[in-house]
Every structure is written in C-alpha cells, then in structure tokens.
Length: 281
Image 1 (cartoon, helix red, strand yellow):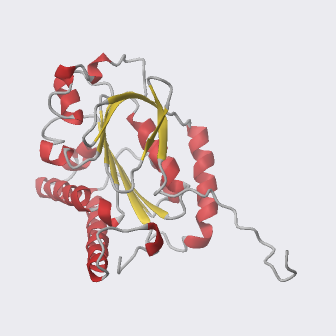
Image 2 (cartoon, one colour):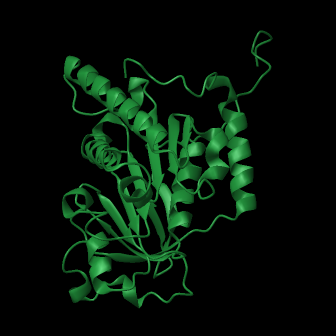
C-alpha cells in the first residue's frame, strides 16, 4: 500500500437493484430470485397471508443497494415504517402527500425519458449515474378507495397506472400490495402491467385469478389451496410463464431494524437531504 493511500477503506453491502433479488424458496427447495429493475411486482391476498414479508424482502435489498432510492407509501404506517429512515420519502395515511410524491415521480420519469431520447437510448442502464427509484406501496385500496375524495382517489389510480406502465425503463420499478384483490381495486388493465404477480392465500378462485390472471385457477393454480397457517406461501407468475409455488423469506422486526440501521449508516455520505430528488432525471 502506498504511503499516500487513503486510510479509510470503503465499507458497503455491494448490492444493486440491477442484481437479482432473493425472495425465498420454491416447493422443491430451490432459491427464488427476481430481476425487478425492469419489471413491476403486484402482491395480493387475504390479510395475514404474508404480503408484508414479500415487501420487506424487496425493501431490504433496495435499502442495501447504494444505487437505489426508496419511496414508501404505507397507509398503516407500521408495515413499512421500520424502513422510514432509509427512504427518501415515506408517505403515511395522507392522500395529499401521496399524490405529491407520485406527481414528483412522474416528473422524474418524464425527465429521464427526455434524457434517453436525447441520447438515442431506450432504457436506463447501470453506468448512467442515475439512481434506481424503487416505489413500494402497501395497500393500494387505502389510497384508491378509502382515504380522500373521489377525484383524489381517481388521480392516485391514474398516476399509479402511468408509473407502472412507463416507469420500469426509466429505472422506477413499482412494488404494490393489496388485501382487497377485486376488479375495482386491480382492474385487468392495471394488473397486466405488472411483470410479476404473487397471489397469497385467497378466499375464492376468482380473487386468485384477479391477481394471477384469468383462467389459472381453473388449471389448478389457485391460492385458495394455501392453508391459512402457511403464511408466506404464494403462487408467483412472471410474464409469459406458469405460476410457481413459493415460500417467501421472513424477516423479523429485529432483523429489519438491524438491516435498516446498517443501510442508513452506509447511505450517510450520499443522502445529505432526503428531499434532494433529481430535477433533470
């Protein structure tokens, strides 16, 4: 080592959102990974089925990826709340705040597409120097059907649809969950924009189909056959694929707090302001 070499050795998790994300195992005990950066992920199923475990697995990977910014929307505050200190934006039960954040994401997305067009490109790549912005939404129905006025709910749905439809090539993947998988919450036109879909335990074959896609229950792939005691089990489908039964890895609150604390420490040099979002994309 040179005498003039810096005494500080960089310490970091060496993860990236361009890396496959570990979700858990399949029914044969094989590991399950998702390449999420150019995709979106939808999770649906009854309360207590394990959707939060899936969201936390993605949030943990994103938090430990220094090329990533987290935008979290959680109407209950507690499902994603342990990641709040790592997020650039954390939205609670406030539809006005949620709309402001989605509008800002839309602006960043539009600016990035303008940059891509100017450079003759189709999508963001790791060497472009732009952070992946991972948006995680726990309970779509809270913002689209429960809180706020009807026009605000409709704007939320429109902004979410636009972000899911166009965000992935701009480096803005969306992970969303709902415990109300119904056509009014997840219309087919929105569901089909999600490259990955995970159906946790559902009460009827129809609600399972709403998440996975029409006809899968009739072919034997129905989340109604997941036992209520088997939390974290789900059917996962990718674009053009067949549903695959998986078991999502579980992170305890203590483990999440430890990961979040470490991620916040790693991010200190690069997050001088949590509100310092890109202006030009």
